[in-house]
Image 1 (cartoon, helix red, strand yellow):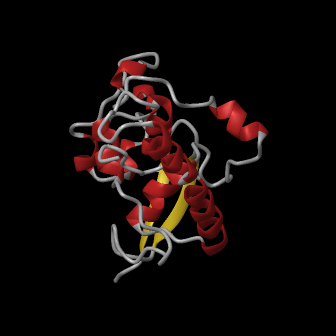
Image 2 (spheres, rainbow, N blue to C red):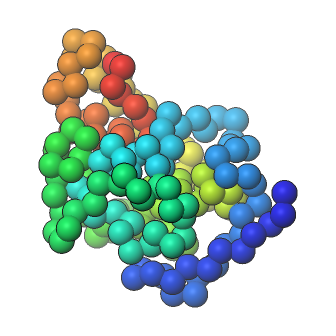
Length: 169
């Protein structure tokens, strides 16, 4: 595969660049198996329609054709589970969970990882965080009837933000 350089100029990053060293959607770490692709997540409805509206040039056009974006301020009715399951970016920044190269957080890291960027230490940290979210699946299984998508909708939406698909639980 030919290495490709991506240059980012959006509201949160100017002249940031990274390299794509793996084919899109392939060669993930063996312990990282997200259930949803970024395109699927955007189409289902995540982050109240506010996420990544200004950085579409960085990713494939197809990701955004059916993406659910809010026109102005956030609209949590656009989320798949119709609830707000997000903390503000400032919360994540205060916890020091934001990696400087990905100022929008985990989903931005995932999109870039999916595209083929690799940063070994950061990839390991983010995959560890992704794995930690799995505990919420156990709560849904324990407290909800199978197929009851209204049960624990905040947890379900949060899991969706982390590429877990709870529609079959």
